[in-house]
Length: 212
Image (cartoon, rainbow, N blue to C red; front, side):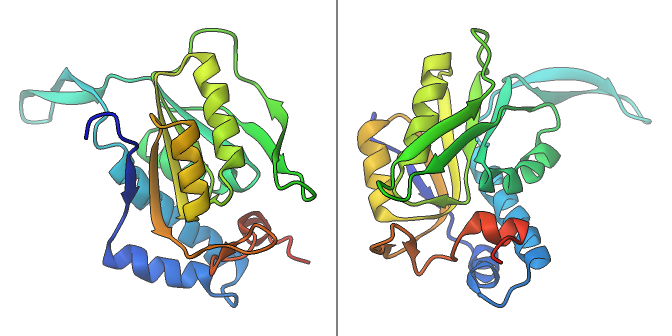
């Protein structure tokens, strides 16, 4: 139905295999980062299918031809810090994209997001923004990021998250129904500590090797 929230779960053999590597507690940080990049690339391929393009006149070594070039101004919005691990994958696919960081941490006593950093300029928003965070757990950080981008004036926002919890999806769709969610897997749910189960642990710690 038109107007209903969009949830796109990327069901693919390669995704399933890479997810297994990502979830394994014995996967070393270097391989974990590489796997995050691979999955982010696959998600980005799916999430960018509706980007607008325009004709571009070029000349190959053989002859002139008409190709395509991106029409939209694209913004990548990683939620610090784990979202940073997904940026390079999307920049490789969209070299002209802008990167706008949002600093959000979860208050462990309330499990609610706390905003501590952003550099979004006044006015002149991007056409399409991709919010990047490997985990969509409670949905609090994603909702906060989405509202900040809407306040900036972004008309089209997409959430790209490798693993999601039903609670976070539901909460986000209720709060921001126009934002598309693209994910590789919807897990069983959240435990008493608000971590995704079975999940993969703390994505930020595993990306940056700070599990200590």
